[in-house]
Amino acid sequence: MAHSKIKLFGAARCHKTQYYQQFLDDQNLDYSFLDVELNDDYAEELRNLYENRKLNFPTITIGKKKLRNPSDKELLKWLKKLELV
Figure 1: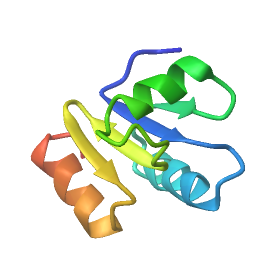
Figure 2 (figure 1 turned 180 degrees about the vertical axis):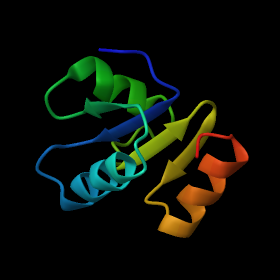
Figure 3 (figure 1 turned 60 degrees about the vertical axis):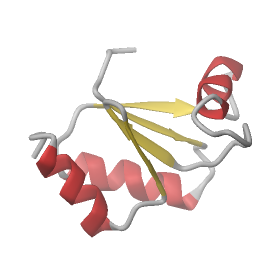
């Protein structure tokens, strides 16, 4: 999988994950989709982002910034701040 600044942790069956995939696709952004239900390594990476070690998905990371279920406005703000859009 290509290395990307943007990672989307989620599950293919999750409608919110699908929403963010479409959102990122619509912005023509390069991102990595990490399905935490199909890959234990991705699940562990997501658990390590949270003190409670829960699979809080969807979670989007942009570099070191972590966003859990961000609004479109919040997500766009960080994409612009980090000069990705």
